[in-house]
Length: 443
Image (tube, rainbow, N blue to C red):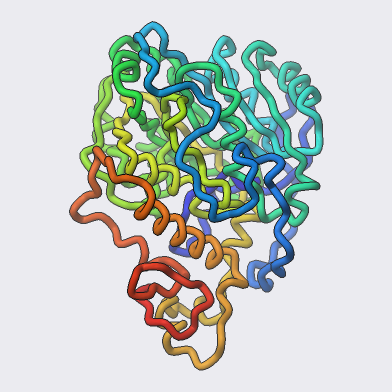
């Protein structure tokens, strides 16, 4: 499962917040699986084979990773006027089969009278998954379930089509607004009520490009051994702000992934601690292009989609936030609302992303390696370099084709994110992951 897409470029293990595949537990039984078999993170990267054609499940019917998209097809017009009474919300997510057990917790916290749209990467049918979720406590009236075959579209287990699944889940939204959260981020019990407060829905109704940030937190795993100890983790997952802050005070929870400053560092966590319930606080600026908050947005045609060329791990959500900012979305965080990350184990996609040339394991910077190494190094053999190459193509496309209507500037001291990329940067700013001769600023 690869919905844990925070783009952590610092090489830390972060095993406190990942998960691996496991057998589905019996109904209502909370128990962790046995310790997974060790994975050789030093193994060579997977051989690149012919790409699988994803056009049949793409909402754009495209199989070209570089066919970047401006807007969301078949969604309602953003120009249609809304009154505050019109504003309603759907919780949207996607997941792999081994995380189906998390959905009843979302149903319970989100509220069983409020809709969820989910896409499950499984060979099971949507009817079968729906029946299981209803049996486990979800309301049949709140669920819109779609399934996509894993054996057909990701036989290697490392190219999970995460953004295609996200777009599919959005396509089944029938409310005015959607709240996106990866399935391993569980909503606070008051999230729907806080979003529905009069002052909040009034802002939503008056601004089609309001993106409400739901601050993300993480809880440490409740067992010392490296396993998914659900019987200990689940009862400790906070439902309310008071319980969350109690864990933070005991250093058993924190803002999400503090090792990855760019990922959620633009969210004003200290402000949120004292922010009144249901009060919106606009973000003054964005500290990093890697900012990837979870958001409530209006579901309408001008909403940028998730770019479907990003599969597996890395940069699949931050690119969405970058395009939202450039097209004029205003980011505002919601007081008392939060998401909390379930402390799962590393996914196969994350392990594939972590693989690197032997020289980089010795602390050599990418740019220095490419510029001074005496041996040819084909970075494109590594997942991370291929993702970074696609990211450079996305940035170039957005700079040339998407008009800059940003209402939230980048901070004056914003991070220079490009220095982390596994590409050479030539004079016009485009990068090549397998260009061994051009000069590099990736130091």
